[in-house]
Amino acid sequence: MVDETGKQLGIFDLERALQLAKERNLDLVQVTEKVMPPVCKITDYGKYLYWQEKKERGAKRGGEIKGIRISFGISLHDLETKANLAEKFLKKGDKIRLEMRLKGRENLFSNLAKEKITKFLETLENLIPIKIERELKREPRGFSMIIGKK
Image 1 (cartoon, rainbow, N blue to C red):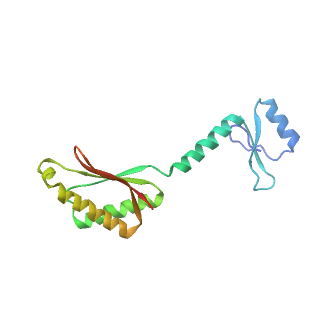
Image 2 (image 1 turned 180 degrees about the vertical axis):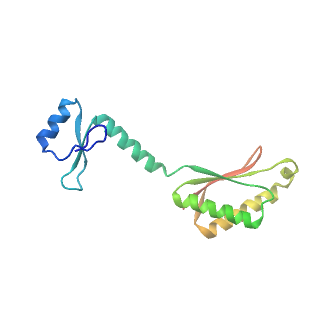
Image 3 (image 1 turned 120 degrees about the vertical axis):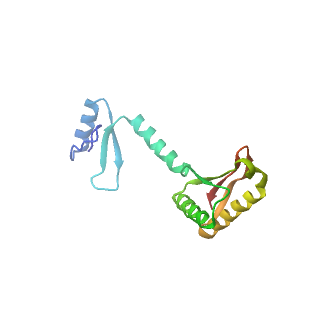
């Protein structure tokens, strides 16, 4: 049995455990039944349910969105390095927000920027299967898209 602070109290029979919980105006919650004897905790049952639901929601969400920014003049080797980084993020379950910022005259060569992004996607596709969550979108300062794992 574990108390509300996380301190292990030892092994108790059910009646004694329930009595301890009642004395502290808390509930006795069975945390796991996979071991013998089962592990129980003295806690507020409402709080316990809240934390369990919060933990499940975090697991469902599937990670966060990581940002990778490539520049207009990026070299082929640097593109491969960024693709390797993106692969690590995708394997962890995160999504990627790919950005290419365009400055000054680079805005005139948006077709070259799209080619660089396509090259990045091809390199990444060779490493891990991907799906495009949000298509390539023109923004005031360049391009962006969101990529996920298939």
